[in-house]
Length: 116
Image 1 (cartoon, one colour):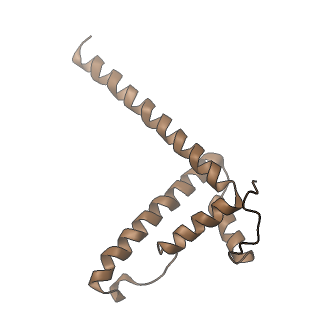
Image 2 (spheres, helix red, strand yellow):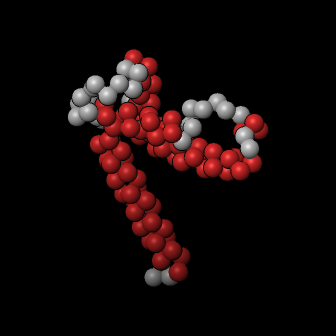
Image 3 (cartoon, helix red, strand yellow):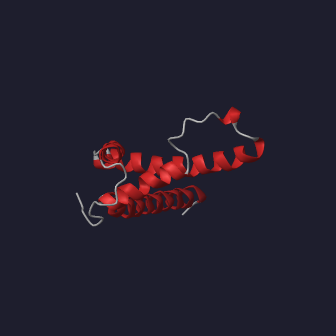
Protein backbone atom coordinates (compact mmCIF):
# COMPACT_ATOMS: atom_id res chain seq x y z
CA UNK A 1 0.00 0.00 0.00
CA UNK A 2 1.48 3.32 -1.04
CA UNK A 3 1.15 6.67 0.74
CA UNK A 4 -1.68 7.86 -1.52
CA UNK A 5 -3.82 4.80 -0.77
CA UNK A 6 -3.12 5.12 2.95
CA UNK A 7 -4.16 8.79 2.94
CA UNK A 8 -7.27 7.94 0.94
CA UNK A 9 -8.27 5.25 3.44
CA UNK A 10 -7.65 7.63 6.37
CA UNK A 11 -9.73 10.35 4.70
CA UNK A 12 -12.59 7.92 4.09
CA UNK A 13 -12.43 6.78 7.72
CA UNK A 14 -12.48 10.42 8.86
CA UNK A 15 -15.56 11.14 6.70
CA UNK A 16 -17.29 8.04 8.08
CA UNK A 17 -16.59 9.11 11.67
CA UNK A 18 -17.82 12.64 10.99
CA UNK A 19 -21.04 11.31 9.44
CA UNK A 20 -21.52 8.98 12.39
CA UNK A 21 -21.03 11.84 14.87
CA UNK A 22 -23.40 14.06 12.90
CA UNK A 23 -26.06 11.35 13.03
CA UNK A 24 -25.56 10.99 16.79
CA UNK A 25 -25.97 14.75 17.20
CA UNK A 26 -29.15 14.65 15.09
CA UNK A 27 -30.52 11.83 17.25
CA UNK A 28 -29.72 13.68 20.48
CA UNK A 29 -31.26 16.94 19.28
CA UNK A 30 -34.29 15.09 17.90
CA UNK A 31 -34.99 13.65 21.38
CA UNK A 32 -35.07 17.16 22.83
CA UNK A 33 -36.87 18.96 20.03
CA UNK A 34 -39.65 16.39 19.73
CA UNK A 35 -41.03 17.41 23.13
CA UNK A 36 -42.91 20.60 23.90
CA UNK A 37 -40.66 21.26 26.89
CA UNK A 38 -37.55 20.66 24.79
CA UNK A 39 -38.65 23.15 22.15
CA UNK A 40 -39.44 25.72 24.88
CA UNK A 41 -35.99 25.15 26.39
CA UNK A 42 -34.26 25.70 23.04
CA UNK A 43 -36.37 28.84 22.52
CA UNK A 44 -35.34 30.17 25.95
CA UNK A 45 -31.68 29.53 25.12
CA UNK A 46 -32.04 31.49 21.89
CA UNK A 47 -33.67 34.34 23.81
CA UNK A 48 -31.11 34.23 26.65
CA UNK A 49 -28.25 34.37 24.17
CA UNK A 50 -29.88 37.30 22.32
CA UNK A 51 -30.24 35.46 19.02
CA UNK A 52 -33.58 37.12 18.34
CA UNK A 53 -32.42 40.48 19.72
CA UNK A 54 -32.31 43.21 17.10
CA UNK A 55 -30.11 45.34 19.34
CA UNK A 56 -27.47 47.18 17.35
CA UNK A 57 -23.95 46.22 18.40
CA UNK A 58 -22.79 49.80 17.69
CA UNK A 59 -24.92 51.00 20.61
CA UNK A 60 -23.34 48.47 22.96
CA UNK A 61 -20.46 49.40 25.26
CA UNK A 62 -17.09 47.92 24.30
CA UNK A 63 -16.93 45.82 27.44
CA UNK A 64 -20.38 44.35 26.73
CA UNK A 65 -19.82 43.86 23.01
CA UNK A 66 -17.56 40.81 23.38
CA UNK A 67 -19.94 39.13 25.80
CA UNK A 68 -22.93 39.93 23.60
CA UNK A 69 -21.26 38.59 20.46
CA UNK A 70 -20.07 35.46 22.27
CA UNK A 71 -23.61 34.71 23.40
CA UNK A 72 -24.97 35.33 19.91
CA UNK A 73 -22.32 32.97 18.53
CA UNK A 74 -23.54 30.19 20.86
CA UNK A 75 -27.14 30.91 19.85
CA UNK A 76 -26.16 30.81 16.19
CA UNK A 77 -24.67 27.34 16.70
CA UNK A 78 -27.90 26.16 18.35
CA UNK A 79 -30.01 27.72 15.60
CA UNK A 80 -27.84 26.15 12.89
CA UNK A 81 -28.20 22.72 14.52
CA UNK A 82 -32.00 23.14 14.61
CA UNK A 83 -32.11 24.25 10.97
CA UNK A 84 -29.79 21.45 9.84
CA UNK A 85 -31.98 18.89 11.60
CA UNK A 86 -35.04 20.55 10.06
CA UNK A 87 -33.58 20.10 6.59
CA UNK A 88 -32.59 16.51 7.36
CA UNK A 89 -36.04 15.62 8.74
CA UNK A 90 -37.91 17.83 6.26
CA UNK A 91 -39.74 19.45 9.17
CA UNK A 92 -39.48 23.12 10.14
CA UNK A 93 -38.80 22.89 13.86
CA UNK A 94 -37.95 26.58 14.19
CA UNK A 95 -41.27 27.68 12.67
CA UNK A 96 -42.99 25.29 15.06
CA UNK A 97 -41.17 26.91 17.99
CA UNK A 98 -42.13 30.40 16.78
CA UNK A 99 -45.81 29.47 16.56
CA UNK A 100 -45.78 27.71 19.92
CA UNK A 101 -44.09 30.60 21.68
CA UNK A 102 -46.49 33.14 20.17
CA UNK A 103 -49.60 31.16 21.06
CA UNK A 104 -48.43 29.75 24.39
CA UNK A 105 -46.62 32.84 25.54
CA UNK A 106 -43.94 30.59 27.02
CA UNK A 107 -46.56 29.17 29.39
CA UNK A 108 -45.34 26.41 31.67
CA UNK A 109 -48.86 24.95 31.80
CA UNK A 110 -48.18 22.66 28.87
CA UNK A 111 -47.25 19.03 29.35
CA UNK A 112 -43.44 18.89 29.21
CA UNK A 113 -43.45 15.23 28.23
CA UNK A 114 -45.69 15.72 25.21
CA UNK A 115 -44.04 14.45 22.05
CA UNK A 116 -44.99 15.06 18.45
